[in-house]
Image (cartoon, rainbow, N blue to C red; front, side, top):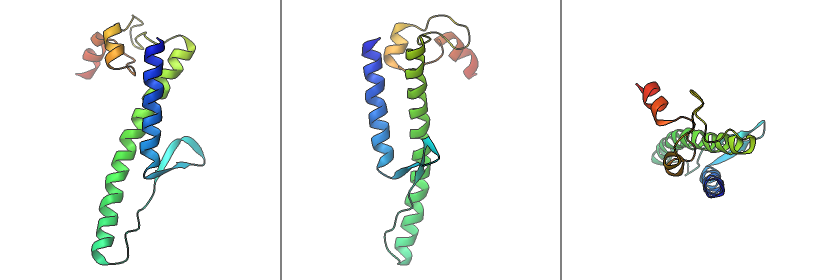
Length: 116
């Protein structure tokens, strides 16, 4: 369990660092980030590049925030003693699955069933 928690905390640190590279924390919601609009200049091609970069960063922000949310939920499950139990059927999630994907909240059987 310590190995997994350490892995999750390191992943959280990396995700937050990545987000801080192009976004700011929302002052009203600590778990939310707001993508900063880049300023490359005032020429037409620079403006186009700003819009393209902003659009790419918005998409990246959503993916990173979702990953950060998954990590935070896994850490919460560790703290409250429910980590490693499937949220659907309540059975133990296999150790190999948790080591491979520490944010897993579902066993392989339920994940397969609900992914269809």
